[in-house]
Length: 431
Image 1 (cartoon, rainbow, N blue to C red):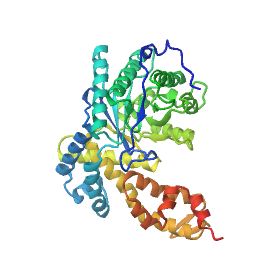
Image 2 (spheres, rainbow, N blue to C red):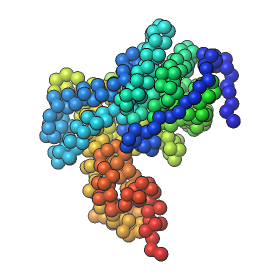
Image 3 (cartoon, rainbow, N blue to C red):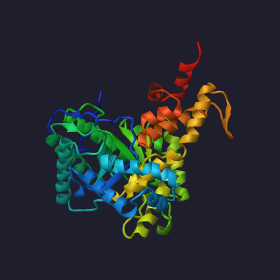
Image 4 (cartoon, helix red, strand yellow):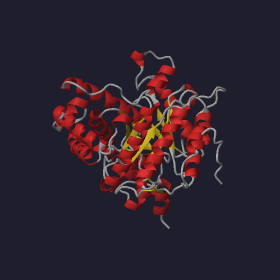
């Protein structure tokens, strides 16, 4: 049974009319289990129904201007020319077909502090644009909003935007939420702030007669209090518990977090050791929960001369690769000119290791997970799922197709879709 929270917390929600809501069908080829490789953040005052298409057009122009062929891309990002020749057409195709995988309409840092009447108007207008994009099929596969923090100073403003946006969206869309819609909660200082957003979701669903649990949200891990609690315990398990099953992701906020740790501006960057430490805590705390992890953003924009763009692209690609090596398969992008380097870095990461991973997996499966030597690499039972995960992640991001995964891995389509190395071995075990 849903418990309706104290209405004083969400007084702005009390006047909502009851209605019905449904979740739209997934777009063709989309899957609820598909984690986006990025989330593009943009100010709510700039969002339009065709934003993804416009961003894609800018990204393609930037690629054509600054890396018109595989050789230029290889030079820009420091890639092996053969790898660049393989990924280049895939990057072009991605920027044409689906340039943005996830978009967050930002009412926080990307929007700034504005008069209440102005934010009210932008909340309604952004909702209108989302409804139009939903009707026209122009939204990215995943979308959502980032509200302001639920601090004492901003909680009323934040919840008002939450209410105005969602109410207007449901009214304009006939009670339909976009697929994979999510709300982002930034700058968490205490578990009670997570509780408050979960309560606001409870109340909104109640007053609109929406099935309980429909609204999902994600946490931004960008304060020290969201990593460790005041008693020294890891904060994340408590935060997740306070979400009441609504939390689907945790995103690391590089610059707020490094600032909170006293790092000077010149050294606030994605590769700083304090960032790696915080992200490793996130990984350990959330392992096995199914909650997606996301890295932060590269704040050096690829804007200007070819030399400047290439330098920014290479930095961005280095950050993306660092995240992938560390097991963070999603990150933030702040400008459309970052999309070419995002997809190129992700695709290169997987394609560079494809042949070696394929050989190891085939060899391992054939020997029924007995410890074995493939070349100079020793594999034991713990390796099997990791090798399978490589192919699953490569398919997820579009680096390889399912057909290519089958051809290279030696597995069947059903075995790949089953996602379990233990089950593969059990099914192949001789009677």
